[in-house]
Length: 91
Image: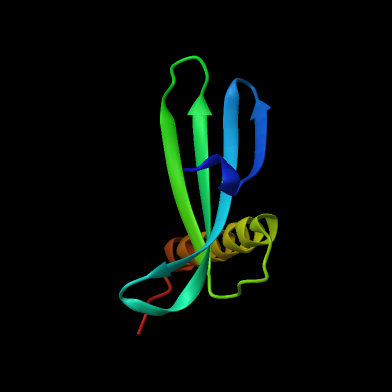
């Protein structure tokens, strides 16, 4: 991604994490989206992983969007675990 969209860059344990943020349009979706792209690079092997997050709230910071997604996935994992442990069934 272009450097102008880089919101934050950190390195920990030889993993570099770059966070990019941009307000973008899509030809199939009428509303602008707040897009956050996480790029993690292993500095030893140069392997990369990418995660794309988005929100329709154009005012949210990249940090807040990332935090909301972390919470969302934690809730989903809790439901999955509850279904397996207690045998919950979906309707």
